Amino acid sequence: MKILLGLVSPTAGSSFIFNVNSKQVESRESVGFLPENPYFYKYLTGLETLLFFGKLCGLQGKPLQEKARHMLQTVGLSDAADRRLGGYSKGMLQRIGLAQALIGDPHLLVLDEPTAGVDPAGSHEIRDLILQFKSQGITVLLCSHMLNQVQEICDRIGVMNHGKLVAEGRLDDLISAPNQTELVLENASPSLIEAFGRLATDSGARLLDQRKPHADLERFFLKITQPKPEAPSTPGRTS
Image (cartoon, rainbow, N blue to C red; front, side, top):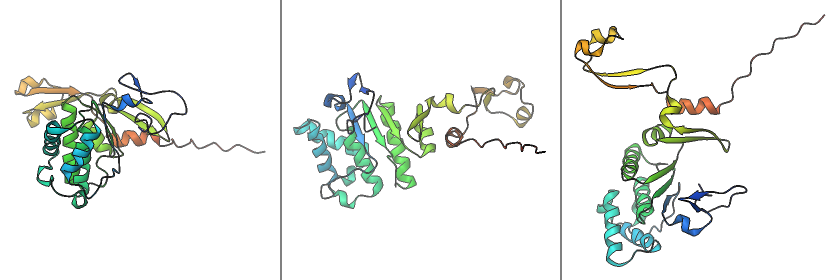
């Protein structure tokens, strides 16, 4: 992530954002970033913070004011616009961090542990915001160890283990159970469930979905990253 954002240089190879080398400043013009532990000026208010970051993105005047207030509304902080960040909770700071990352209308949003240290309610709100950004066509690159949240948000995942990419692909493909089929029925009677395999229409049920059952993403992660136990060796005979 730091290489993509131009914070460190790669020892080998190269990286590109929208076909622009990440070493070039221009590659970050369409990128918003929220680090794991963002630093904000605690004596600024929420509105002043967004005005500051908006100016860094080249906004000014009335468009900047309107954009800043719109972002505060988007992340649910309109009521705290005039409060200093020193009085914000951890969840509120993460939401103002999302707002500053989005004020420049990025096409790529890079999030590093966006719910770290946030209570369950705040974490749920941030998750919903990320899904909202995703539905708006923004590409979200999320780095997190909270795998249940990853499973709820991401379409594609990559699993890193000791600095190496050990698995990558669509989430459904990686955690689906092979050679198994799962049927999701609506209005299924107990007799239909007991007689699994009979046609759903015989009981007036409607087949809603047919898919492969999924394993838990956390179990998948542990399966591919934990070393396999070695087979016990057979003791040799002595004469």
